[in-house]
Length: 140
Image 1 (cartoon, helix red, strand yellow):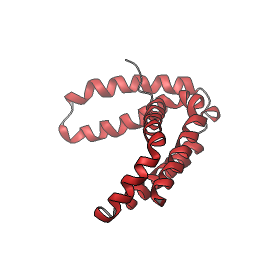
Image 2 (cartoon, rainbow, N blue to C red; image 1 turned 180 degrees about the vertical axis):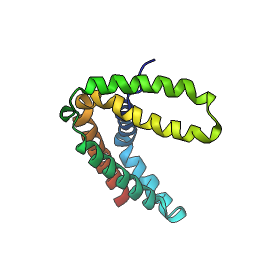
Image 3 (cartoon, rainbow, N blue to C red; image 1 turned 120 degrees about the horizontal axis):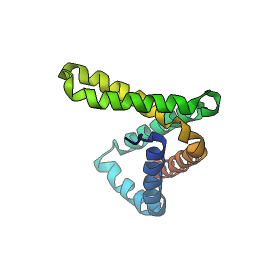
Image 4 (tube, rainbow, N blue to C red; image 1 turned 45 degrees about the horizontal axis):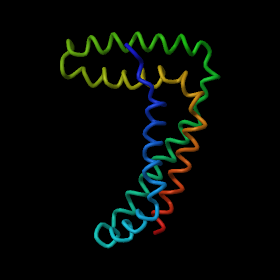
């Protein structure tokens, strides 16, 4: 069973969003200007997205896969744990399935850490580029 790669998924999502946002920035500014009187909370939405991206950037910046000895072994371990959790989840009572989902979130992060070194700089740049464009929309 292949491990989910959260950082690659994040890179793909940010790339798709930026590829949509950046070339249409002038059109989107017009949309934001038109929406502000009808949906004043549109600026709040932009602020919230900018804030979330800032927090995400800070968390990614803190991660240093090179500082973790035997990272590949840790990722292999969590991949094995993932298989056990996924296979056992349907057998557990409904009330315990949230715990499995929480454990799978941790597994996803740890198993993805080896790839972070490859995409960390690109993720940080994508976040910065998206935030620049969002700030332009906010100022519209």
